[in-house]
Amino acid sequence: MMDVSQLLARLGLDEADGQPAGKDELTFNCLWCEENGETTPDDKHKLYVNIGDKFGTYNCFRCGKSGT
Image (tube, rainbow, N blue to C red; front, side):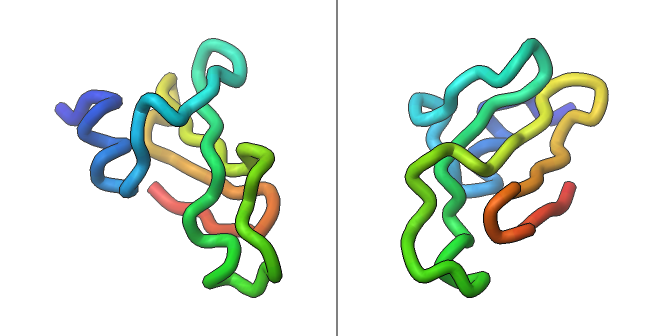
């Protein structure tokens, strides 16, 4: 089974850049906002990555990028 470090590496994220958002999620600056039409990079940690019951799901509440 994949652990948190492996999941983040697969998504191209650095664990040190994450911030806790409750017990089951980490937030990051989204890597895909500009590719998905935003005019500036995300600097407000809008990408949420689930590390709990829905392990591996992610969603950016700025550009809409999501997946598992």
